[in-house]
Length: 471
Image (cartoon, helix red, strand yellow):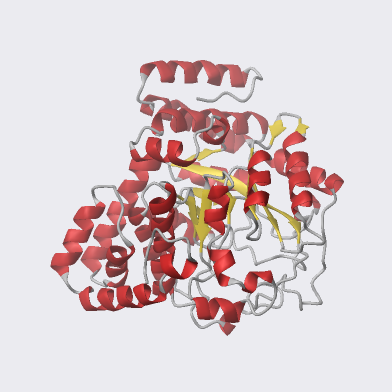
């Protein structure tokens, strides 16, 4: 029985409801009158239901798809302006007790080098990331109660926040670890984490159980209900995501939106972020073994539809995707990207990119400086801002600001000030020159005069060596 307010996984992600939604979408994919109504609703910037969005995903009318893409681009501008938030993943440990068949960290993979960073090694990794200019990390670790207990994660977070190197500082640590208890989520909240991220991998219960044959992750309900426990534990910024390519994409898309609707219905606040990873090659994993892979065109359409269906959510894309794909989806709704990522444990301190312990192949292997310059050349402002989380603008407080379009008054100047820090401390001369011009041009886009004047003053202070201003 489908019930978005239920706390039971099989009721808020109802298999029958998804099948019925897909049938409805197939029946109406050429119903232009209905499609126009749904697009008109999307233009109100209040989002779409999983059923409405599924009709648009099924629709293959080129004119309507163009309209959807133009709307996605406009909604992205309305809510996020031309800012793109920068982050990097930090892999703490690849010890894992699960048997996930699509991940090289699975227990039976005997030829991957297993490694867990000591606190001293974490410090070196973080300094390497700070030396690039990163301010926001997403920490990753395999599920292993012996090697990676919650105490290890908490100690690692404390270490990361404590490291001040030259002008470097990690100001926000997001956490991507296995589903856990309310008590452990409370501990993560107390440790000062930003967003708790957990990918569902697939919402199709039967496929989920086959893809996770052994280990604690096999428990579909416990995994799917994790965000409710995180919210109960006081974490009000949570990040959803599916691994596209494991199951049929239309099923996953409907499930993902149902999960967002569930969080909104129960907790009054939807997902802070939605990630859109696609299955990629990795050690011991051949994506061709999974026959649900999606084309770049379908991937772009999914990104555009997530943007118009959940307009307030941050959308994340990783270096799994190539520069060309990232370029397209940034336009259609992505608001956060990683740069210069290394997906192996201890990868940042190695001169050559290690491939023997990567979680997945990295398609976009450019340096952070190159990624920042590329974004600016396309007219975007790379933002290293972490102000909302540090000012307590999380959960429903962030969402209400975002939904009212008010976030621009603090996010735009914060983006310019953190970009200025990057230009002063880490950028190449060429990147710095482009960045200074962009800052000059973008100052006029700050709506409030007073905010603009304070921002100008702070930019001068940053040039004179002061750091960490925020609205």
